[in-house]
Image (tube, rainbow, N blue to C red; front, side, top):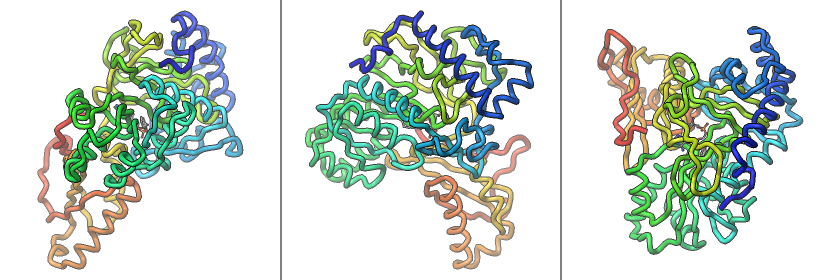
Length: 433
Ligand code: DLL
């Protein structure tokens, strides 16, 4: 179902709207965010030089480190009194990145999520269970507002506690499940353990995002849960969920093009690639008041489709994400950079320079084991010292990453040394992404 006629505007009208909004957004960012002002000045570019959509390419990229370097609110365009919500996500090292929404930003985000919900065929007749975390992560609140806007009955159960999730699903006759795909697969395992068959549930639709899932995972989810699986995509820096989403035709994810312009670039050279090419997707926000993003490099690899979709939406679609151009991993929906773990380890006494992250899947849930060498293997002889150090590392990593990891301390010089780049991550998960 189409939520807003803006989703079906003729191409020419979309581009006209995009250009008007782009010119506003660039001028607004230039006038309100010193970071953009200096950046554009340094190359002699004035907002008035943006006369066509192609002129967007003249603007330099923004990257995650720009948010980190300006932590917490250095890229905000308004004072905190105009911000009605903060969210956050992992930075590349210890500090998270923080974003803020004005009241209008919240309204637009809700609109984007309402479109996503409708595109999956969800209506006010449905009951939706939001198994995304409610907190700094954008998943829970983003979907929540979009669902409420459509009039769906929302169960804000948040993430975790699978037995309770399944109890509510049964007792409140949940028809829509909202979660990361890996969590959904985990739930199917618990269903098996608890002797719950898909016929015992009322599920019809899944809205899954925050991480990718392969066609094989999709088939498995559809078969085990008996639902129509739809994917959606987004990132904290742009708003969270609601950037793009699949309709029931499963022909790629429709981008909310009246709020975001997408480009595909070569991740190595930064050059914009011709239509249809695979590369890194870069987004520019068009209406953001809290924290405008000009040409934000997502590091996500995909491609764009321009052919019309049978659903009637005219916005460009993006393919399912094929991978990343950096070393970010997504563990149970949480973004994890090896550099974050490294930053923690290097601050702990008794720990050597060598470590490795082993990523595995257990019952469809991703797990990380941090193997780290000690300075002095002697500590391995004292159980209490060993436990103390292991707990300290676990606790510090949890503070930064928000997820539990297993910590294994190793004798000095246990991990393999390489002449070139050391292999910090051993990803043993069956799904590549
Ligand atoms: O994951 C926002 C979100 C929440 C989207 C819930 C959809 C549903 P971040 O935590 O900032 O924001 O992580 C953003 O997650 O750059 C992608 O690498 C990855 N990602 C998000 N959705 C998908 C997807 C939220 N459908 C990062 N497929 C992004 C593949 C995804 N990767």
